[in-house]
Each structure stands twice: as C-alpha cells, then as structure tokens.
Length: 437
Image: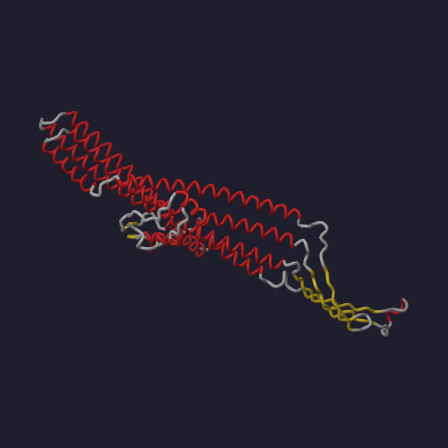
C-alpha cells in the first residue's frame, strides 16, 4: 500500500519537471544570432509541425490511391452434406445415399472507368497543396520571427535609453536640490526637476514592461523559459531589398505568394474531386472464380461477375456539394488576391515612407546628441543654465534620440514586411550573411 502512495507522490512532484523539460530548448538561450533564432522557432513551431504532418498524411493517401485494386480479395468457402431418404423409416438405414456439396470462391473488386487514375490525380493535387502550405507557413513564421526580434531589440534600446535618461534626471534633481539649499537656485527649479525625475522613472518602468512583453513573445515562439537569458548579439541592421515599381511589385506578389498558390491548388483539388465523383457513378465490378463440388460429386469450375446497381444513390448530391465547394474555393482565391494586393500596396508605401524618415537623420546624430546631453549636465552643475531651460533642452534631445531608435526599428520592420508581402524568398535574406547593410 505504501509503495503505491510513493509512486503517486513521485509522479506528482516530477510532473512539473518533466513538463519543463518537454517545453524547453536549451540550445536557444544566451547569445543568439538572427539565423539561430529563426531555426529555433521553426523547430518549435506547432503550426509548422502540423503542416509537415499534413504533408506526410497526403503522401500516405497517395500510396492508398496507388493500390491496383480498390479492396483486398475475398476468399470464401462453404461445405454441406446432403443425405437422401426413400421413406420415413430410412433414417435408421445406414445404406442411404449421401452427397457432399463444397465450394471455394475467390472474389476481387476491380476499378473501371479510370477511377484509379483520377484518385492518383486527386492525391497528387493534395500533395502539391500541402507542400505549398508548408512553404507558406515557413515564410510566415520566418517573417513573424524577424518582426519579433526587431521589436525585442527596439524595446531593449528604448529601455536602455529611458534608463540612462532617468539617471540623468535624478542627477539634475540632486543638483537642483543642492543649488536650492545653498541659496543659489529657486525652489521652483527644484520642484520642476523633481517632477521630471518622477516622470522619467515612470517612463523607464513602461519601457521595461514593453521590453518584457517583447521578450515573452519571442521566448514563447522559441520554446524556451522566460527566465532564461536571451540576447541578440548582432547589431540590428537595415535589410537590403530589391525595390520595384508599385504595380510591378503587386503583380510579382500575386505570382510569388505561396499562400495564394495554396488557394489556387485547392481549386484544382476540388475540380479533381468532382471528376472522381463523376467517375464513381459507374460502380466497380467484382469478378469471382470458384471451384465447386456439386451434389453428384462432380467437379465444377466457374466464374461470375457482379456489379452494384446505382438506383438509390447516384452521387448527384455529392457532386452538387463538390461543385459548391469549388465555387467557394474560387471566391477564397479572389479574397486572397484582394488581401495580397492590399498588403503589397501598404508594404510598398511603408518602405518608402520609413526610408525617407530614416535618411533624414544625419549619420552622426547619436554622437552629437550624447555630447549635448553631457554638456547640458555640466552646464546645470556650473549654473550656466537654469534648470527649467535645461529640462526643456533635455526633452528636445531625448525626443530626438528616441525618435532615432524608433525610426530605425520601424524602417527595418517595414523592410521585413516588404519581403513578406511581396512573396520574396525569405531564406535568401534572413538565412544568409550577405543580405544586410
């Protein structure tokens, strides 16, 4: 009895440990490159694994369709003994004649009307659809991963910036307090500096929450615990993208987007389904051969053919349903085309807009801003500038620095969206080292 309680207790305390081991990916923590994070997400993604399993199932269905016969052969045997009687008292007569009836029959259903060929065509169409679906999910997952990485890096930079500015605001508040106590500064300047310090502390906490949310999104995609350290140690870079004119870009997007190809292949699949149902209106034959021993103890070899009668069920309802599904697939393809054109136009305009905003910044803007903040701090300490004027100047410099990081991140995100919306092969850009500037 105690033994069973020990087993239950062991399972109870080990369940969280086993669960953590199953949902952790130890090779995806610490310092990681973008390419490593992409591989980690793909290896962990349930959607990607489901798409691959669906492809495996389609390959199995093709094997089923490739069978030479629709069913396995059927072997049946029968045996009977017949005894004849001349009158009612003959039951006690051992000399009554008897005969043995026996039969062995082998039956096999066979395809007619080209049903096997259409089934193979249907299975092949399903495989093509599943292959494109795997590619579509792979590209979507890569784009989503890059988007999450860019947000993670941008939120980290924003957090570090607000952290530095919070320290600067606290130092300014201390200087203002000291100047007020020494009688060389006003109480109003101290109150303004203290208020700014409190506000910057709140902004730092908000930036911390944004960074934590971005990390949560990324580690869940990677399948690693939140408490593990994760650093993207390569610098966030603006991607090189092949820029086309708007209409050319939209036309190429409609040709290259794998999710749109999936919808087109689904139309072909439904049409193959209709052809199969039409062929199945002609039922399969069943051919049988038998060896029989009749009542006269004679050997008989024969054969027969049977065919189901299509009286009550003629596939008309199934064909009507399949045709309706085909029309639905065509409308879904049209909806997909609308979505692709909208996303492509939005992505093209987004890249143009954020590129202009990014190029508006001088190359050395960060160095100059940091130098000005340091000069501002020294000017307050020496009394060359009032605290009120210093805080106004500081806000302008802080907004400039924050806008720089946000613009850089948004431009990189816009480039990523340009590649995804245009159906451009993301492996060429994100899984190679030569695709950054």
